[in-house]
Picture (cartoon, rainbow, N blue to C red):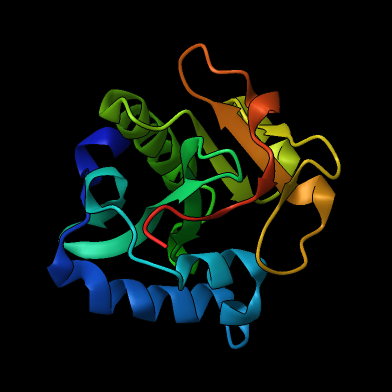
Length: 168
């Protein structure tokens, strides 16, 4: 199965299907998490957000939200990354993350990608744990789950302070 041929840019028509998938994968209360609070500050970027479709059925999605740190360094917050329960462990999540990182790199304005997630899953994709106490989100987050991926020659250790939506 060629996963890359199943990945397409997110379009506005996908939004209702993505909401249904998010509800199924994350359950109630997901919007109280720190990363969701940050995403509520403004829209995600459709140019760096993608869906995976199998026979025109949405099976996975990843979104990228434009952010800035306290020094004004532009980046993206990756997520939510959601894969339908029927398609877990088929490679869609990693394929979508790679596609989103490539798009962020090609965009040329972002210096890093930040996310809240499991280091063992994301480390092979180039993410590392942020230095404790250097970066914060608008709500509590386990510092071991706050991960960053530098883009280009940017030093990921330069990301610092409270992260907010780039449009706020």
